[in-house]
Image: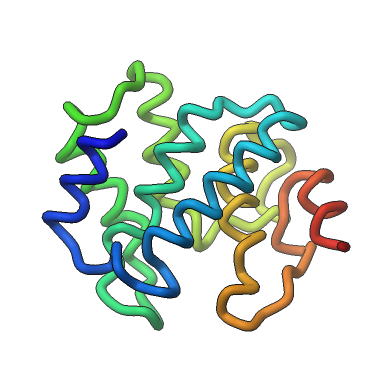
Length: 147
């Protein structure tokens, strides 16, 4: 992970952002590790997602393509990501869809994807918004957001 973070630091300035940078990524990882204990998510994927999902933002505001760009960035840096091919495909999906995935779009969902997306959404308070459970996938995140 350290080599990937060094590469991200070389490739982007967003790492320093107060809104979408390293401190947000660390909170997403903390949230994901907490959720993963309950959901059974693959926490290795969750950790990589935490640091990749916003690393290709071009601005702090409207940037709907940053998720797909993050997935592309992960592909370009595959040699720095210690996941098997199945895990890597799941990581790409998590990054690609993290801003647009909605619980109403899924009859059932993989626990790792749900955990990644909820971990990110639980940190929405950093921009002055309250967590809205209609955007959360896991029951545990919904319960957690009520506090």
